[in-house]
Image (spheres, rainbow, N blue to C red):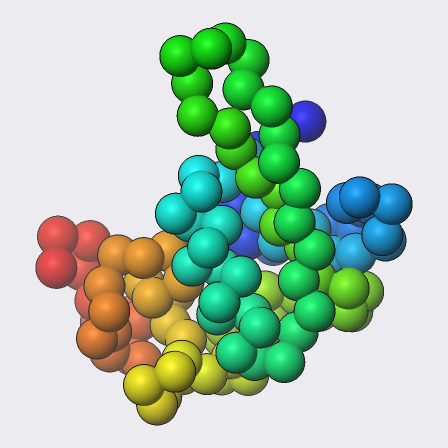
Length: 115
């Protein structure tokens, strides 16, 4: 399965994870990333479905596929329309979603890549 990153792909991807039809949030995510997304999405009252993808070799860590059961949920729209909140207060920004910063400015268009 080709990796899908939530906000790097504006296409709304529907699929099945563990036999449950859902919106695919991300595929080939690390364990740490899967935990981050699970906690964030569950905090926003979304039901998360997750599966473990076996590693291609013994040296690699397993990856995870994460989805939500809300078929109409689109992470791109949810982030840019400020529909997702973070536990500390405030809204999820693109930088927060991508784990580039924890105290991100909502004015994402002013943020430079090196900050």
